[in-house]
Length: 79
Image (cartoon, rainbow, N blue to C red; front, side, top):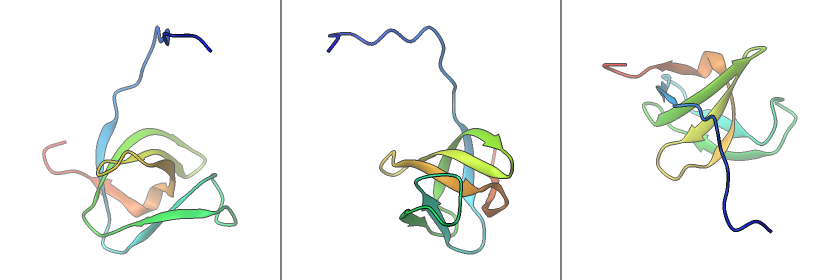
């Protein structure tokens, strides 16, 4: 295992929040995938990518990485 990680590029997360209803955080971009957690309304999410209606990123409170339906997210205030 390498002792250092080389990362020539990185993406800065776009701040988003969970919309008015709880939203499951999936391990893969499919509703049939394992549900890892559930974001609560207003909970912060770091958006890294949106593809085919799925948002990939992480829950800000603990940096748990996963997928949400993009429609479950709203822009964060001031973003």
